[in-house]
Image 1 (cartoon, helix red, strand yellow):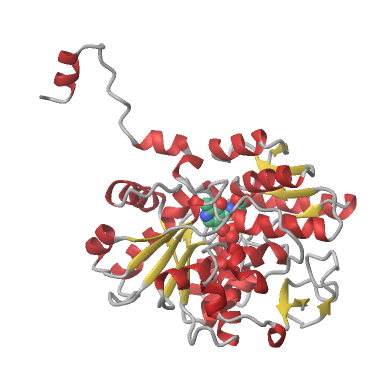
Image 2 (cartoon, rainbow, N blue to C red; image 1 turned 90 degrees about the vertical axis):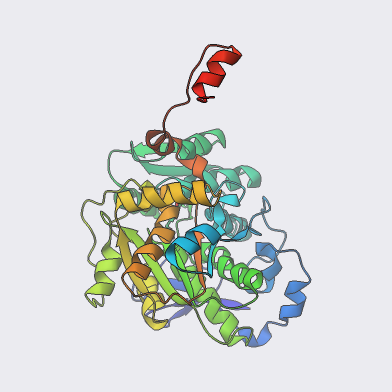
Length: 401
Ligand code: F0G
């Protein structure tokens, strides 16, 4: 049993309302469960395979979901990077190991399932890339059309390829993500498509399971969870889920929620550093981490609460720091992630060096998307292959042997 509740004025709405904001005050909505009616124990959950659907009692989907077998992603112990930083308990939850290569699949399995449950027949989103790839895949699985709006020229190649191949109607606008989001909201309102950006409260329900899995894998609540922040949905989702576990008595404390942004796109960091009640949008966001090139994060209200109420923090990292950590993850840990994902670990490096993070903390970084999402940024950083004539002597001399 659940209802949609406004996070600001507390107005509540029936779960079948097609609403993305409170119709009374315009603020964000969240799915609010009657936790007294949730009859499940941690032992029940632990008996099921590690997957998003392990936690189905805390998800809004009633029938069989539209699923591509998302979740159950690896939690890696970052031993070498941890040693470099003096952090013996540093972990990465590799969300790039989801079906379409990013955490968005957790949101879309629930979001597209809810679209069908609510009787909607088409779906849409604006995206910096991953949301569009994921929506396209899940809409294909559901057999319904998808429209995706992308900022022209600012989406990594692998993501566009996915959205196109899975058969979405792909529109590139001559404007940035923030404008694309405004446009798709208008489109959905005027033409009845179901909006599956992270303003959709059901989508975030799927994403909250990142925190559930991390705790189950670690066997404990980490002291800190660190996430890259773009539209600020994921950090809000993980925090919301953990509050539910706390209220159910499944955990006894919350991790310090910590958000990392790119230096050229840091409105949440500014709001935290300056103690602002409301975020001031960044006008022209720019970063190599195009996934988080967002100036007006739609979930800022929830994210600021998540960070502040848990004693967490926010920090910005430069493009150079992001790319250096992308290389470290690849070369020291064998973990291939896209730039936005490396931002979370780069942020930990910065915060530990600044003395904000204690070295004895257990820290889970969410690395959000796979290396292959953005092959062009990878190739630009690496030496090209050494091309040789097809004989052994040339091979040996290329290897200096
Ligand atoms: N990491 C990656 C790889 C992403 O694609 C995104 C968001 C984020 C982090 C930030 O998550 O928005 O919940 O704060 N990508 C969106 C998209 C905006 O359209 O794919 P957030």
